[in-house]
Length: 496
Image: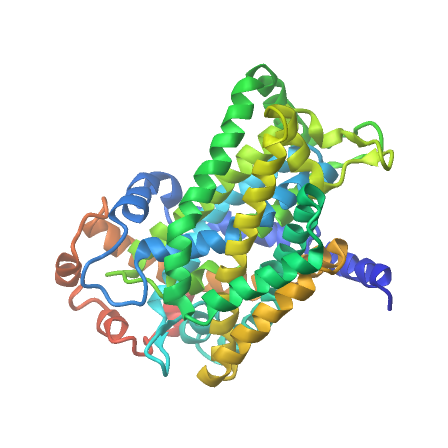
């Protein structure tokens, strides 16, 4: 089968998975259900969570491999990638400006999902043969849900995650970097592939501690520089913002139709691409961020869950919004490419939008450099996600060979067709999300109950490790969690 035929098949499968009867209602429904069960936690606790993650940054004396801040930046590294630049452009280019609204909805409801999966990742983590923490859906689905069904969901997730990491976290990122560097600086894709492969290999062989140090150093810088560039453009185009917001909210419920090569877009297309690219960007509901959260030095699962929740806020409400508003406010979303006579490619759309708003070639360079940093960091974060699932499936002995293989596949990703990579990533994202979302619904009672217990004692997240130990003493599962033993969860606990 040629690449065109393969892409067609993958897009058809993706259309079913991301259609109106499978993942879209499951994602939005799970996020809404968890929001209600947790009492709107993502809105009421956002301030203390941001303070804990960005300023306090760690729980002294707590067990784990990396600080809470490093766990946050590792997850941000994995999510703030091409989805924030190319993914947003793809959603708006196909679904119209209304797709940005559905990305916002996915992000806001997804914060409750992100909290729950990070909480469970820490709650059910274990210590592997090398003394490192290992957790995520590949463990909490089996440990939290009694019987064979939980084990099936866990293994399904682990297999899907290993395959998916080569798409969303590897080939897609490398492909976008190589395409943009070639367009901006005429750098051959094979040169980019070699450099990225060597970079990945040098960092990844050091494991999560090496990844944590690297991401903690440059993830905040790359986000700040990108957001500042976008804010400058929005200030310059402030007069266009009211119309941009009106178009976003109107088209979210009516669909849109543009001139040139843009095909008519019905509301379901706006919803489908908004939700699909929203989860591609922030990964809420996929379970991936729970793997990074499980490595954190934290005194209680609630604390890391709230820190991880801020990742979705930063990714979607801040970075995605900046990209989307720049594309819409500058009118680039329905520009025509003079070379083809059709709508400008999503791969180049964000760069063109920034070029409209900044003098000279600054806009194009900012987007290109931002994409290189975003996508490069995503490769690091997703390598860790993949290796933790390889460790779950095969054992610790497979981790180092996986790191080497993952680094080599980066080179392949730099030279393959973009459409196939995106379609493949959409399919695998969906297959990861399905078992995780089912597990979140089943385990929602346990999450809600233990969250309430903790927040009743520490509503502002200021308790020290010793204070947490004092008010949690004697609580069911507390001693097991501290020793990372297998927690005992009754059937009734999982269902409540």
